[in-house]
Amino acid sequence: MRKNMYQNVVANHFREHSSIYLFVIVLFLMGVIFGAVVVNSLSFTQKEDLFYYLSQFFGQVSNEKVAEANDLFKMSFFHNTKFIGLIWILGISIIGLPIILILLFMKGMVVGFTVGFLVNQMGWDGFLLSFVSVLPQNLIIIPIFIVSSTLAVSFSLKMISRQFMKKVGQPMMPLFGRYMIAFAFAVIFLCAAAGIEAFISPVLMKSVVNSIQS
Image (cartoon, rainbow, N blue to C red; front, side, top):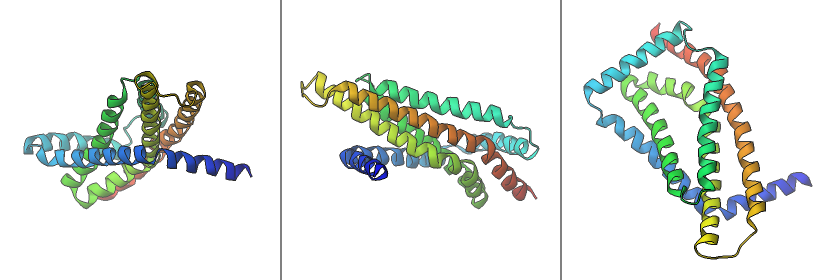
């Protein structure tokens, strides 16, 4: 009974915000494509410099000279939590709506540039490296960012309609309470993503880098 209730709540949420989800997902994908395109606009010297630093990093991974797993976990968790926290604050600030969309686009651009650069410079090996280094944690992070951005955009639009269009809708306090709970759950999921990035991705990266170098 309770399971069906939760399923109905989730289904109603996605149905109610389907247009915002569609817009947010398309915007993120545009960022990914733009990031991949930017790789081709780099000069030969810029690509060489970036690939040199990348090779240095891969050497450190192979020799296990990267940061400790606990340090990686903290860095990943706090970085993503700060990003989500910023989106949360922008969602209740009314004027933060365009900045939320810009941040989401930039997140997509970073992912697209990273994968695009690895594939551009290393071909199939680069694709394999991006698969083990970028994909695992982002299977959690990207959906969380998309859901969080959608919630922030939705909350901001409701505040704008109440403040400037004088529309009377649901009371804001219950909405704000659900908004806070949703972001608390987002932080929990980001903790899991940080664990993957710190304890699983480096192991996968090491095995791929060693296979490339051998």
